[in-house]
Image (cartoon, rainbow, N blue to C red; front, side, top):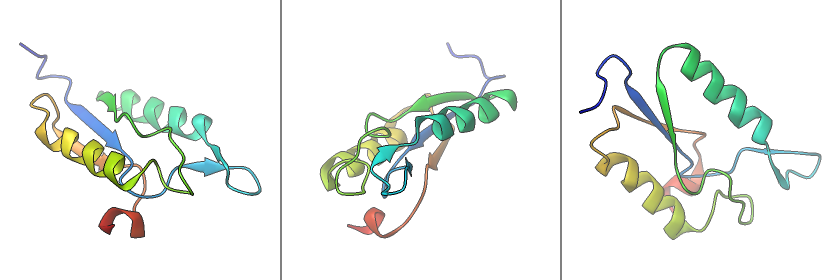
Length: 93
């Protein structure tokens, strides 16, 4: 049985990747980790989708990977909130 005092946020990336660098061709791991730290400081558990650190032509993985990651969050009984790392055009693809 899970701890109801520590709800879980599932962070996924259904659109663009969280990038850094002048050309936007590197995953911004520092920003992702900082965000996770802030969420945990509020008392939440963080669950990370499989594609959150992938980069495919600016997107966080292929269309199939992004769709699967989003659906995994909705289907996980331990997840209380599904949070998109960022939004945009890629979500609708």
